Image 1: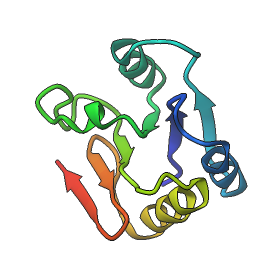
Image 2: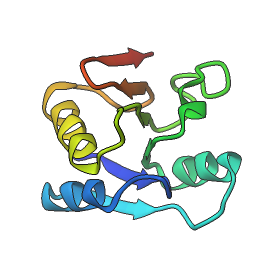
Image 3: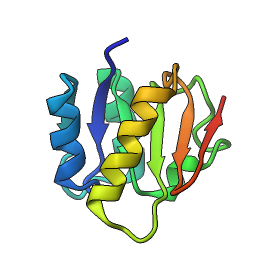
Length: 113
């Protein structure tokens, strides 16, 4: 499945570049919008949200299946190259991202939903 992504404004350009190179459609959210607007854009355009904002990992606020999918990059230290490598690992190894919350850590992946 060829996913389409919405990148939060806190996601580094290296992630944008990685996704474009792999043939994915990618958009950035407009600057300065709040979380509610971000998730509304993702739903309206049917795009999986990629963010560093851990608020989006809250399954009560964003229940699995109520959105196209959320990937939270919870990687420390915050080095863009490492974030891109971990996201590439997710794209190669996780079979289904749609409608789920996927939290990506340095050494593990947690999938909710």
